[in-house]
Length: 395
Ligand SMILES: *Cc1c(COP(=O)(O)O)cnc(C)c1O
Image (cartoon, rainbow, N blue to C red; front, side):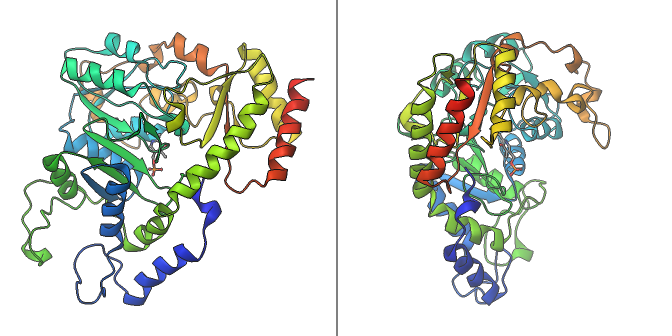
């Protein structure tokens, strides 16, 4: 998955353009920057590549989520339906907006189950925030339909799924806004960076202003710009945008490699009857950053994960025991422990996450192993990996 595996002269060239001019700020300095607008160029090319009306680049995927929530008007006391299998950033963004994360079950897509959303909806629900985990997609059409019926905002966390599509349409373009991360381990990276995309001009304008202290970015004198709203600083630097621009231009190459590597490993795993695969609503659209599969039960999944590790089948994740991506190990969320008092604690409706029960998600996650698909694997390394996998599964 990680784009850093293929850093080369292209990234260096884009960064050198910026260093040569000394303009590290994405706005202004029109003369000094000698025509180099890395953030702006990234935004234009990204929106075109994904078929979105607008893109705004920002400092991280977490920032993108905060920007999306704010721009869609999600704030104090609003409830947001989210899945328990995600990166903690999704939950932090909701809490930091003063809003309330409401967890709903996932299904065999490893993403929010459309049928799990309805029971989580209350009179306070304003938005649904599905996360397209591990490079593939949620049942996004069904989720969108449900949101439309109920008048809910749909924000997609596509931080792990850049370049993935459902029926030919890019993930991130189904909702009001889509969020992406270009952190150091994502499919393409800026070092640190993120983006929102949207088709809504108003939403885009709000996002653009919110990311930069409310500046309306009208005219060519920053000191004279209006500030229609309060915002914050989630800006990206030109240096980070420059790396991302070179990486973006490699996205198709990255996807092609991942898909071919994944296909080989998946074919080998298919030989074993105890293995079944994560449901992927549109196989063609899978970005193939991970191969996720199920074992018959929890104890067998644990056993296989351990034996893979011992045999040198690296890059495998048993999320159920891992404190990165599944709520089971997140005591800081269950106790709402942050550096300071969170706004959610002022609410009468503040949930007690210690009492949270997600039996369906537990049943799925306890049987799931995900294998990272690397770009740098050679044919030989793939064959060796397949041999090791087979040696574990035939034991
Ligand atoms: C990486 C990630 C984020 C946060 O992105 P950062 O750029 O690291 O802040 C949010 N959601 C998901 C699902 C992610 O994988």
